[in-house]
Amino acid sequence: MMLTELADVLRRAGLPAQEVAGWQTRGHGPMSSVSCVVLHHTAGPATGEAPSLATVTTGRPGLAGPLAQLVLGRSGTWYVVAAGLSYHAGVVFEPWQGNAHAIGIEAEATGVDAWPPAQYASYVAGARALADYYGVPYSRVLGHREVAAPAGRKVDPNLDLAAFRAALSNVEDDVTAAEVWTAPIRNAFGDTVQAAQILVGTEHRVADVQRGLALVSESVGDLAQRIDGLSAGGVDLDALAAKVADLLAQRLAA
Ligand SMILES: [Zn+2]
Image (cartoon, rainbow, N blue to C red; front, side):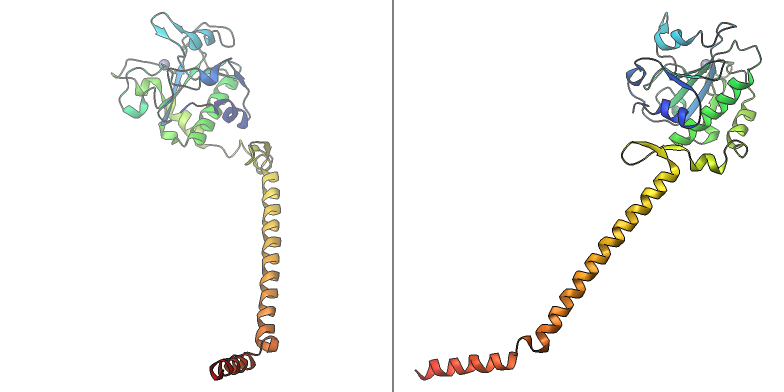
């Protein structure tokens, strides 16, 4: 599978997402599944929005890019790098944690500095949106240092990962009913509409079906009346039988 919905999933969560040209076909082949989300930091330069973006996209000596599907800039903007398999996890403890099953997120950070609040909030919201869309339990949103084998091989990301996962579930303050009602979602025709419009469209379709049923009911009633007409003297079966018998008798007598 190619993860060509990545940009839409992030935008639907209200997050800014920039698409790196060619991302929809970039990858070391397709993904086998999405079974986990692996969080990284780039350990890149100390300043700049996303100075590691080019490296994550095209690779570094000895390791061809893409090196993750997504880069998270310091402003909280997401950069969509690849829809296919990316080399970010390396050797892992469990098969489902491997590159063929894991969305990799490289957050731009030195690994020693504090996280800008906007970037951290976007990291949580984006990871939540991805986990929700691909059906990944929040317990499988994991730091690289948690999946990398042998233990201690990686230190990234420098986040309290238990707190990060707890924040994934803590959405009460983030979404209001009005936001859900007006959320942009795709309808059956691929158009982006608000959730409320889908409901109105469904009501119209139900009304169409009800009108169709009424027409069928009328036709059935009409048919029943005709049958009643036949048995109520439209055809006199006794007279018909008598006539047939009469004709037979005449033929036999001839
Ligand atoms: Zn890493």
